[in-house]
Image (cartoon, rainbow, N blue to C red):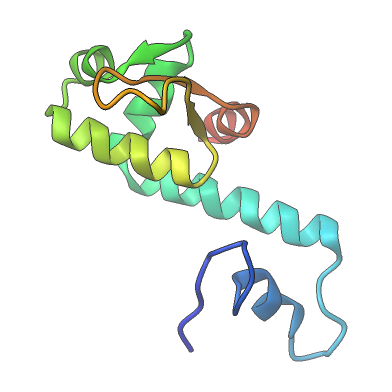
Length: 116
């Protein structure tokens, strides 16, 4: 069974988790803990994402500075930022700008970074 991780409806991972074999499902606290650890595992599995989160730990940075600090190609830093933004671990402070966007780590991102 293929499960989407979208949280905006449809066949989500949380819905699938609630349909456990015993029929009792997961309590909301367990589901949120699972999602937290799922995000932690995504960051651990990607050195690029971990480097970007760690770089943002000190404060807001633009894409170019992040790429330089992490010793990544700008395209790889951009991809990591886009993926981290989609999962709520970082947020773009200047989404209207086509280039030189500034990012910061979210509270969820800090929590994930502490667990890595």
